[in-house]
Length: 109
Length: 113
Image (cartoon, rainbow over all chains, first blue to last red):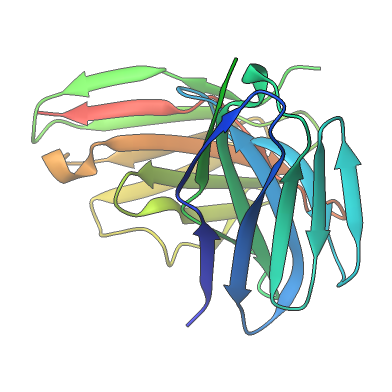
Protein backbone atom coordinates (compact mmCIF):
# COMPACT_ATOMS: atom_id res chain seq x y z
CA UNK A 1 0.00 0.00 0.00
CA UNK A 2 1.25 3.48 -0.86
CA UNK A 3 2.51 5.49 2.09
CA UNK A 4 3.62 9.09 2.46
CA UNK A 5 5.16 9.97 5.82
CA UNK A 6 6.18 13.44 6.89
CA UNK A 7 8.44 14.28 9.83
CA UNK A 8 8.51 15.92 12.20
CA UNK A 9 4.82 16.53 12.87
CA UNK A 10 5.62 19.95 14.29
CA UNK A 11 8.66 22.20 14.21
CA UNK A 12 9.25 25.31 16.28
CA UNK A 13 12.04 27.56 15.03
CA UNK A 14 13.56 30.83 16.06
CA UNK A 15 13.67 33.43 13.32
CA UNK A 16 16.82 32.81 11.29
CA UNK A 17 17.23 29.22 12.50
CA UNK A 18 17.45 27.03 9.38
CA UNK A 19 15.97 23.53 9.35
CA UNK A 20 14.66 20.74 7.10
CA UNK A 21 11.40 18.87 6.75
CA UNK A 22 11.30 15.28 5.53
CA UNK A 23 8.83 13.46 3.29
CA UNK A 24 9.47 9.74 2.81
CA UNK A 25 7.35 7.63 0.50
CA UNK A 26 6.69 4.12 -0.69
CA UNK A 27 4.68 4.27 -3.90
CA UNK A 28 4.26 1.62 -6.56
CA UNK A 29 4.50 4.14 -9.37
CA UNK A 30 5.79 7.68 -8.86
CA UNK A 31 5.41 10.37 -11.50
CA UNK A 32 6.47 13.21 -9.27
CA UNK A 33 6.33 14.82 -5.86
CA UNK A 34 4.64 18.08 -4.90
CA UNK A 35 5.12 20.42 -1.97
CA UNK A 36 2.27 22.62 -0.79
CA UNK A 37 1.95 25.25 1.91
CA UNK A 38 -1.31 25.52 3.89
CA UNK A 39 -2.19 28.45 6.13
CA UNK A 40 -4.96 28.09 8.74
CA UNK A 41 -8.41 28.35 7.19
CA UNK A 42 -7.09 28.26 3.63
CA UNK A 43 -6.56 25.76 0.88
CA UNK A 44 -3.15 24.26 0.07
CA UNK A 45 -0.98 26.59 -2.00
CA UNK A 46 1.30 25.01 -4.59
CA UNK A 47 5.05 25.46 -4.01
CA UNK A 48 7.13 22.98 -6.02
CA UNK A 49 7.03 19.98 -8.31
CA UNK A 50 9.94 17.52 -8.44
CA UNK A 51 9.98 14.81 -11.09
CA UNK A 52 13.28 12.95 -10.79
CA UNK A 53 15.88 12.00 -8.18
CA UNK A 54 18.54 14.67 -7.85
CA UNK A 55 16.22 17.47 -8.87
CA UNK A 56 16.17 20.66 -6.78
CA UNK A 57 13.81 23.65 -6.82
CA UNK A 58 14.15 26.94 -4.94
CA UNK A 59 11.78 29.76 -4.05
CA UNK A 60 12.87 32.53 -1.71
CA UNK A 61 13.93 30.83 1.57
CA UNK A 62 12.66 27.38 0.53
CA UNK A 63 14.53 24.67 -1.33
CA UNK A 64 13.09 21.26 -2.18
CA UNK A 65 15.16 18.21 -3.08
CA UNK A 66 14.24 14.70 -4.18
CA UNK A 67 15.87 11.28 -3.85
CA UNK A 68 14.47 7.88 -4.80
CA UNK A 69 12.87 7.41 -1.39
CA UNK A 70 12.38 10.84 0.12
CA UNK A 71 12.18 14.55 -0.34
CA UNK A 72 13.42 17.38 1.84
CA UNK A 73 12.15 20.90 2.19
CA UNK A 74 14.91 23.14 3.51
CA UNK A 75 13.96 26.43 5.12
CA UNK A 76 16.88 28.84 5.25
CA UNK A 77 16.84 31.72 7.73
CA UNK A 78 13.07 31.47 8.24
CA UNK A 79 10.87 34.44 9.06
CA UNK A 80 7.59 34.45 11.03
CA UNK A 81 5.66 34.63 7.75
CA UNK A 82 7.03 31.16 6.88
CA UNK A 83 4.84 29.73 9.66
CA UNK A 84 2.41 27.28 8.05
CA UNK A 85 1.72 23.61 7.53
CA UNK A 86 3.79 22.13 4.73
CA UNK A 87 2.30 19.19 2.87
CA UNK A 88 4.01 16.83 0.48
CA UNK A 89 2.08 14.76 -2.03
CA UNK A 90 3.21 12.00 -4.35
CA UNK A 91 1.85 12.03 -7.86
CA UNK A 92 1.16 8.42 -8.82
CA UNK A 93 0.93 6.53 -12.07
CA UNK A 94 -2.86 6.66 -11.83
CA UNK A 95 -2.54 10.48 -11.90
CA UNK A 96 -3.84 10.83 -8.34
CA UNK A 97 -2.14 12.62 -5.44
CA UNK A 98 -1.50 10.95 -2.07
CA UNK A 99 -0.82 13.49 0.64
CA UNK A 100 1.25 13.21 3.79
CA UNK A 101 -0.13 14.43 7.11
CA UNK A 102 1.98 17.59 7.01
CA UNK A 103 4.57 19.35 9.15
CA UNK A 104 3.39 22.41 11.07
CA UNK A 105 6.16 24.99 11.23
CA UNK A 106 6.08 27.84 13.74
CA UNK A 107 8.71 30.55 13.45
CA UNK A 108 9.12 32.86 16.44
CA UNK A 109 10.43 36.38 16.06
CA UNK B 1 -6.90 35.44 -12.98
CA UNK B 2 -9.44 34.14 -10.46
CA UNK B 3 -8.52 31.02 -8.59
CA UNK B 4 -10.79 28.10 -7.72
CA UNK B 5 -13.99 29.40 -6.15
CA UNK B 6 -15.97 27.45 -3.58
CA UNK B 7 -19.24 28.19 -1.84
CA UNK B 8 -20.39 28.35 0.83
CA UNK B 9 -17.26 28.90 2.93
CA UNK B 10 -18.99 27.61 6.04
CA UNK B 11 -22.00 25.34 6.38
CA UNK B 12 -23.65 24.24 9.59
CA UNK B 13 -26.49 21.77 9.29
CA UNK B 14 -28.35 19.20 11.30
CA UNK B 15 -27.98 15.48 10.90
CA UNK B 16 -30.24 14.14 8.18
CA UNK B 17 -30.29 17.31 6.11
CA UNK B 18 -29.07 17.56 2.53
CA UNK B 19 -25.89 19.53 1.94
CA UNK B 20 -24.66 20.87 -1.40
CA UNK B 21 -21.17 22.23 -1.89
CA UNK B 22 -20.25 24.17 -5.01
CA UNK B 23 -17.07 24.71 -6.99
CA UNK B 24 -15.98 26.79 -9.96
CA UNK B 25 -12.61 25.66 -11.35
CA UNK B 26 -10.00 27.90 -12.88
CA UNK B 27 -10.95 28.83 -16.42
CA UNK B 28 -9.29 26.52 -18.93
CA UNK B 29 -8.68 23.73 -16.45
CA UNK B 30 -10.19 20.46 -17.60
CA UNK B 31 -9.60 18.37 -14.47
CA UNK B 32 -11.56 18.92 -11.27
CA UNK B 33 -10.97 17.19 -7.94
CA UNK B 34 -12.95 17.00 -4.70
CA UNK B 35 -11.00 16.38 -1.48
CA UNK B 36 -11.93 16.07 2.18
CA UNK B 37 -9.58 17.11 5.00
CA UNK B 38 -9.87 15.96 8.61
CA UNK B 39 -7.42 15.88 11.49
CA UNK B 40 -7.61 12.10 11.65
CA UNK B 41 -7.26 11.24 7.96
CA UNK B 42 -5.63 14.30 6.42
CA UNK B 43 -6.41 15.16 2.78
CA UNK B 44 -8.31 12.45 0.93
CA UNK B 45 -9.36 12.42 -2.70
CA UNK B 46 -13.07 11.76 -3.07
CA UNK B 47 -13.66 11.97 -6.82
CA UNK B 48 -12.24 13.61 -9.91
CA UNK B 49 -13.58 14.66 -13.31
CA UNK B 50 -11.96 15.13 -16.69
CA UNK B 51 -13.83 17.18 -19.27
CA UNK B 52 -16.92 17.07 -17.02
CA UNK B 53 -16.91 13.24 -16.89
CA UNK B 54 -16.36 11.43 -13.56
CA UNK B 55 -13.20 9.35 -13.92
CA UNK B 56 -12.59 7.89 -10.47
CA UNK B 57 -15.04 7.97 -7.57
CA UNK B 58 -13.35 5.24 -5.51
CA UNK B 59 -12.75 7.70 -2.68
CA UNK B 60 -16.42 8.55 -2.19
CA UNK B 61 -17.16 7.15 1.27
CA UNK B 62 -20.66 5.84 0.63
CA UNK B 63 -23.81 6.25 -1.39
CA UNK B 64 -24.81 9.29 0.62
CA UNK B 65 -22.19 11.23 -1.34
CA UNK B 66 -22.68 12.22 -4.96
CA UNK B 67 -20.92 14.65 -7.30
CA UNK B 68 -21.81 16.19 -10.62
CA UNK B 69 -20.18 18.44 -13.16
CA UNK B 70 -22.85 19.71 -15.55
CA UNK B 71 -20.44 22.00 -17.41
CA UNK B 72 -16.79 23.04 -17.49
CA UNK B 73 -17.23 25.83 -14.97
CA UNK B 74 -19.34 24.25 -12.24
CA UNK B 75 -19.38 21.20 -10.01
CA UNK B 76 -21.36 20.15 -6.96
CA UNK B 77 -20.75 17.69 -4.15
CA UNK B 78 -23.92 16.59 -2.40
CA UNK B 79 -24.35 14.73 0.86
CA UNK B 80 -27.79 13.29 1.55
CA UNK B 81 -28.51 12.57 4.36
CA UNK B 82 -25.67 14.22 6.24
CA UNK B 83 -24.17 12.71 9.40
CA UNK B 84 -21.94 14.19 12.14
CA UNK B 85 -18.97 12.14 10.87
CA UNK B 86 -19.17 14.08 7.59
CA UNK B 87 -17.91 17.17 9.43
CA UNK B 88 -14.69 18.21 7.68
CA UNK B 89 -13.24 20.78 5.31
CA UNK B 90 -14.05 19.99 1.69
CA UNK B 91 -11.70 21.29 -0.99
CA UNK B 92 -12.07 21.56 -4.71
CA UNK B 93 -8.98 21.65 -6.91
CA UNK B 94 -8.38 21.92 -10.64
CA UNK B 95 -5.61 21.52 -13.19
CA UNK B 96 -5.17 21.53 -16.95
CA UNK B 97 -4.09 18.64 -19.15
CA UNK B 98 -0.31 18.40 -19.44
CA UNK B 99 0.28 20.34 -16.21
CA UNK B 100 0.05 18.09 -13.17
CA UNK B 101 -0.03 20.82 -10.53
CA UNK B 102 -3.39 21.06 -8.81
CA UNK B 103 -4.67 24.40 -7.56
CA UNK B 104 -6.94 24.38 -4.56
CA UNK B 105 -9.89 26.50 -3.57
CA UNK B 106 -10.35 28.00 -0.09
CA UNK B 107 -12.50 25.11 1.07
CA UNK B 108 -15.92 24.69 2.67
CA UNK B 109 -15.97 23.95 6.38
CA UNK B 110 -18.92 21.64 7.02
CA UNK B 111 -20.27 21.04 10.50
CA UNK B 112 -23.06 18.50 10.95
CA UNK B 113 -24.68 18.59 14.38
